[in-house]
Length: 272
View 1: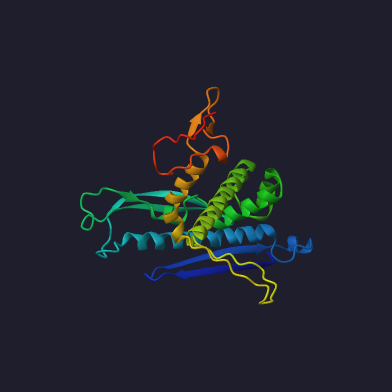
View 2: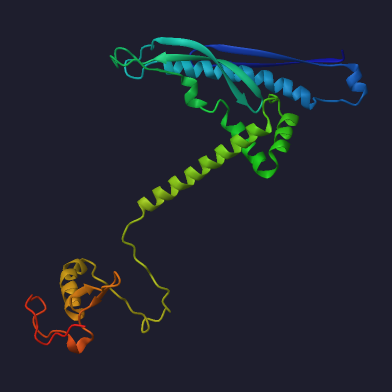
């Protein structure tokens, strides 16, 4: 043995709990004589796997303990059970303790509901970074090649096959589509319904003009305009052979000259 490296990581949460993890790396003379100087990819995988396991376990326990406290009465919630859960990260798969808490009986009487806190922060059983990295590689190269690249440079499990890469890529793509649709929906909802359309004017005040349309008067004049339109075109009747409607008067000279609002027949009306 030539050199022995010891890497120690220590973490402390706000509850006072301390987590300490040590990783040992041995470098032999044979590796040095072969030109293997420094840390290799395999050494990096070993170090990052050990450190990731310590960090993930400590953070999972801290979040679970934080979610056990009821936000209303600030008491501990009852325990449903304790299970284990595997979380896949870019530096390996970590198995953590997965507790389930019951709803507070004092604040929510009659409600028998249990929830897992770790499902809130990791619903896919994989970190968001691993999901995004897998989707990026899956979109740039074939799925099998993406799975080989992940296994070559990262300490991932052999279960990270091309099928897993394909599922994650499709899932991330669907989430991006939903996110874009939601952004467009919110953007259209925030836009005012009545917009002011501006034209590119030449800059000469003698050639500029302004058109103003009073939209409030359109609804009041709509009934009168419809009555005048029916009076000009005349009453409608369907054809015998088709379903289209046509006016009873052939042209403007045969239309009735009486009161448009009167229902009495006009003597000068001529049907076709």
